Amino acid sequence: MTITVALVVTGSIAAYKAPLVARLLKKAGVRVIPIMTRSAEQFVGRATLSGLTGEPVRCDPFGEGAAGELHVELGRIADVVAVVPATADFIARLAQGRADDLATATCLCADAPVVLAPAMHPRMWTHPATQRNVALLVGDGRAELIGPALGEVASGDEGPGRMSEPEAITHEILARASRREGAAARAARRDLVGKHVVVSAGPSVEDVDPVRFIGNRSTGKMGFAVAARAAARGARVTLVSGPVALPTPAGVERIDVRGALAMKAALWGALGPELAHADALVMTAAVGDYRPKSVSATKLKRDESSVVLELVPNPDLLAEIGAARKTARPVLVGFAVETADDEALIRSARGKLRAKGVDFVVANSASDSFGRDDNRAFFVDSHSAEPTGVLSKPALADRVLDRVRTALESPT
Ligand code: CTP
Image (cartoon, rainbow, N blue to C red; front, side, top):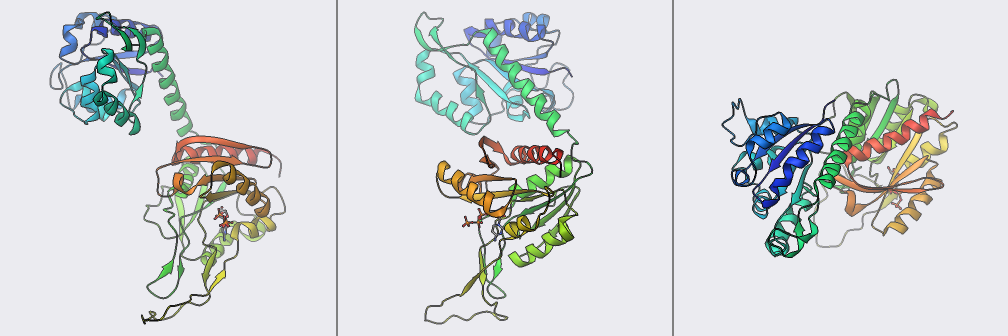
C-alpha cells in the first residue's frame, strides 16, 4: 500500500529545505501531496515542489480543480500531515483551531498524525506565546514536534529554532506512517474467530430503596472497548454491563444488570456449567464490594436523626469463577483499580492475581482510568509487570486481547 504524506510548506526561509524532504520521501516510495501557504510562495517555487512530487501544488481551498471539499479529502487520504517548515504564525493559527486557508484546514481535518518541524528565530521559538501554543497542540495530542534543533539560524544568530535536517525529518515522517500502517493492520485482524469472549463492564449499583442506590464512578468505557475490539476481531461476545450511558458495540450480545448478584447470575449464565461455554472472561466491571442488607420496598423518608445503613459483603465474582476453573479455560483476566502509587498498585494487583486465580491482572490507577478515553496500566502476571504507557482504551483493549489470544494458544 502506498503511503501518502500531505507536505505543508509555510513561509520561513527554511522552506528551501522542504523540496529536499519531498525528494527523500519520493525516493522512499511515498506519494507526496504538496500544500503551500501564501507566504511560502515567497520562499519556494510551486514548480519546484510539483516537479519533484509529480503532483499539483494545493494552495487555494477553492482552486486547482478542487471538487468537493479539498481539505476533507486531503485530511482523509493523508497517512501523515507534515508541516515543513512550521512558522510561529502557523503554529499559533493551529493552536487556535483556525481553518482560514487550505493548510490549516487540512491539519484541522486530518485523521492522521500531524507533525510540525518548527523553524524560526530563537527569540520567536522561546517566546512564551509560541511555547504556550506548542504546549497546547502537544497537550491536546493533535500535533507532534520534529525539532527544532539548536544551531545557527538565517540571521546568523544561534539558539533553538533551527529546523531539523531533511534526513531527520523524513525519518520521523516515515516512522509515523509505518506506525499508522501497523495500527491499521492490527485493526483489521480477525484472530478471535470461533472464540466466545465474555466481558463485564461498568459499575454495579446496589439499590437502597426504589430511588436510591450505592454505586461507583465507572463509566464502562474500558469494558465496552474490549467488547467492541473482541467482536471486531471475530469473537462471539457477551457483554454483561452495569448501568452505563454507552451504545452497544456492533455485533455484541449485551445483558444489562444492576447489582453484583444479578451480574454474578448473568456471568454464570454466559460462562455455562463448569465454565465450558466461554474461551475467555475479561472482568473490567467495578463490582461493588458491599450491598445494603435489605432493600426498602418504599422510598425511605427523611427525619432529623442520623441513619445507619447496614451493608453486607458481595461475593467476589471473579474469585468464585477462578476457584471453579479446573483447566486453563476460560482464560481469566482481572482488572485492579487503586488510588495508590505504581509500586503499591503492582503489589496489590499481584495479590489479586493469586487471590482470584486469574491469568493476569490489568492494574490501573483510578485517576488514570475512570471516565477517561485513554488509560495507563500494567499487565501483571506471576513473574512480570509490563507497563503499557498511555494508550487509548481501544488500543489497550487490543493489547489485553493480544494476551488473551496468546494464552488461548497454550494447551488447556
Ligand atoms: N471483582 C469481582 N467481584 C467483586 C469485586 C471485584 O469480580 N466483588 C473483580 C473486578 O471485576 C476486577 C477484580 O475483581 O476484575 C479486582 O477488583 P478491585 O475492585 O480492584 O478489587 P477488589 O477485589 O474489590 O479489592 P479492593 O476493593 O479491596 O481493592
